[in-house]
Length: 553
Image (cartoon, rainbow, N blue to C red):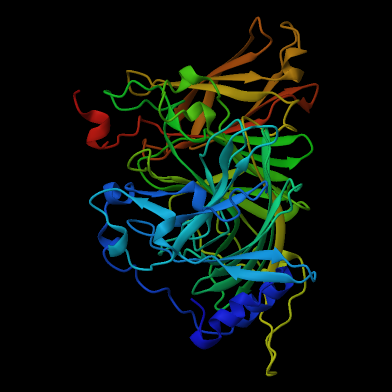
């Protein structure tokens, strides 16, 4: 954990609030990084089946059966859960002071199925924790929020289940080098009152490049669960690339890509698109397109109002999966406290091996102060297979002046501060309720080479429903590495509009480059739909699927 072991417990136990946590993080940024100890045996040798034999005893939860709205359950270490975290509660006292109390690891908190034996489990500590309690006006307690693995956390609303994840920070992501994963090493959870509808959590972040102080405030709801985040990150060593509010998810197949022949499910994904809000009624939607290689799409943004990984299609038949219930996975939406200026959103799409592994990431890159972007010129988005390196200015990221290092004993390294809200809900953000949305995408590839690829997009929304069939909107379209042809737009009886068009490759594109598409519906010079973006593979990507998808039953 922290350096200077003799002072470690004192430093951690002394944290009472966000200010004292920021002081701890600033001090630790001046110390060398100290990696956590390796996972001990036999936990390090556990396989998946071993780990699944360990179950938390709910009656052992912190604050369980004390008349409080929330309580805490811990995660056991073992198998892939190698991280070690310290857990503390911050409890009120009769004097008004806050008391910090460590949550100790105890094998009595868990049930171990045979052949595992509790007396053979070393005191290995915690891998993470989850917040449990009843959603508003619901009788039964449910898991609401969990922190486990690096800086990952997942939340859900009362009417959704777990799906896409959020992260505290991403360092050197989508570069031609190994990504650095900062860890939440210590948590302090504020004991709620009996009447409280929220719970506060402090977290200390640690990595070779940074330390960080994070404050989370969970406000669970049946329709929307919100997590308010406030953070200050300090540098040990300035990384080449730092990404704020990163999200991760999974998309294996669905609209535009068929699944393996022996899997009858039409779609398998936790999210089906990236949504970006750049103004009150300015929305960009990028449908996912899994390539057979890693791809990065970059979108320049002058003023970021929000972005997220959205599970837009909520129909069960779209997935036909009674076990995974992808139709109930939440959308995850990032909303800065104030619009973030002059940066860009990157979307990383990886081929992925199977649906148990995330292969998507989206994140905000603050303004670049020292290195100009080397993107290929385009009107809006750029797709690259080799992401550009960029040194991030903390001053620009936080829009605050940072104190520069000096020779004094109380040196304060530059830091960045940021605040935003993470929301978990079903479908689109409630504020995206006017412009038409791309609700369905079909891609049909020709049997003969040289013929156009046919695409069909269905747009639905209140503004579009108000347009009569004899006054169709116009189509604003752009393409890179290809050309759009044969456009046709028709109104349905429900008031939706279906756009059909073809795509051919440019002469200098022999078929080894995807075609970047951008389309929007406009009426009387005003947008009536979000801007639709898509990275179209010229041929159907081929993947080698594991046996679970291809075996004969």
